[in-house]
Amino acid sequence: MVRSDIEKFLLSVEKPGRYVGGEPNSVVKDKSEVNIRFAFCFPDVYEIGMSHLGMKILYGLYNSIPDVWCERVFAPWPDMEAKMREYSVPLYGLESGDSLRNFDFVGFTLQYELSYSNIFTMLDLSGIPFLSADRANNDPIVVLGGPCVCNPEPLADLADIVSLGEGEEVSVEMFDLYRRHKLSGHFDRKKFLREAAEIPGLYIPSLYDVRYHGDGTIAAFTPKDGVQERIQKRVIQDMSKVYYPDNFVVPIIEIVHDRAVTEIFRGCIRGCRFCQAGYIYRPNREKDYTTVNAQSRSLCDTTGYDEVSLSSLSSSDYTELPELLDNMLNWTEPGKVSISLPSLRIDGFSDELTEKLKKVRRGGLTFAPEAGTQRLRDAINKNVTEEEVLSTCRTAFNGGWTNVKLYFMIGLPTETLDDVAGIGELSQKVVDEFYRNPNKPKGKGVNVTSSASTFVPKPFTPFQWEPQDDIDTIHRKQQHLRESVRSRKITLNWHDADTSFLEAVFARGDRKLIRVLIRAFEKGCRFDGWDEYFKLPVWMEVFEECGIDPAFYANRRRSYDEILPWDHLDYGITKDFLIREHKKALAAQTTPHCRLQCANCGAAKLTGGVCSVLKHRNEKRG
Image (cartoon, rainbow, N blue to C red; front, side, top):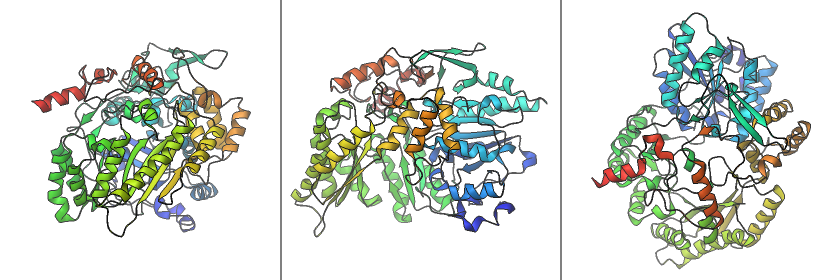
């Protein structure tokens, strides 16, 4: 449903298909039959947001409720934003074309800290006040969700509600409460938010006061009006029974991940100490392979996609992977549908898996050693040896692959220049492994692409207390890495240190940063995750104007007894466990993964006191 007031300029902006809606499988409802309207906002461009699985799941779930209408909203690219301001066009939902001010809820999913500035752009284009305290009864309820809300404090004063953890069940409970309040005849915003605080998994920032010490650290979080001191995230107990859509909205322009996607499990058993997702998505819960197979086939039938991706944090850790692939091959091979298995573990790449992968996909393979030396891999608990890396590559080369991508990190805690040089040395050993292989493909060379991202300390990880290397140090390490690679068979990439610095600031920030975010928006900051728009000098000017030192958040080591901005949120992982893991990291000691030995991380309380990994293992044993 294209708004008539954008037709006059739509063809003058880049990729107008981002803004018109009307895609196959999009949902349009009769407004007269709807009680609750939800704007699902992705604070990045259409091509990124339409690739996001969480949006697909919740869009389908919300629209399956008869009196709820969920619409999609994406951040307009700067050329479109300029036209919308020129012609006084408000930000609108793609399905109806209505302004966001007409919705009951405006929900933002926070996937990446550098998308925060886009939230202010979207609210400003909608005429919705930035701060929760400034909104009236007839303003939309602003909800934040997604992985970044494990520390929502930089945006706490913006949010009416923060939804912690997995949203399928808690959202329905929130809608039920809102429906009762709305139908009562007089909606009282404050009363609704106070009652919403009683729903497990919902955090209402306005009901908590924060007090600071003179040095800027937090002195106390104080709940108001009798609300609970700590808010525990929500977790889906049975992945095989939880809602999953049988169709996706099919985009009319090319997006980043243009394929069907099916979840195979949530959580991770590994415990890599830098990986936030590996901790905040615990406990590990698998979906039955027959359910995955049926959902994958249904999605391909209803969307026309000829590729399906099996989504998880570590695909080769799925215990029913052989059975799943065997069943999927029964219909994907004759239907010429390819299967994508992202996030393969180095130690899970077997000859059996190689044979199956030959049938379902071709192209490059990606593995993540993360560090170039064994000492550092032990410190980060990667639990992968150099021989396993080379053996895995040998298996891949035997299977006919010639392109391998290796992911590493720079700036990890305890890292030395020898560790940095080890990235180049390990990459060279992979190249040498190819040429030593008598079964290598004839007439083909090898290409090893080694990518080194910059370490960002994140909440709810054992490294949450660690400082990030400053920008100059990262640049020196990147130069050292560049000098350690001499083969033309190795392509070297690295992540910009400036954006990683700002990511660290907001990942571990507190409520004082809301002033920085608003001022940065006013000075033109947009799409900070995109190189062409990121302006670190502008951000540094803003920090100075606001009297805030960003190094306080990014480059400072924290003590174990400091109150962290996210300590009042409970993601299942205990602080005692994280401290134990941090101390083991400093000693370069490893912890076995969950299927080998329970590390008592605390996540078992989220599934009734029994660790889901151990329970699943015992059930498999019969």
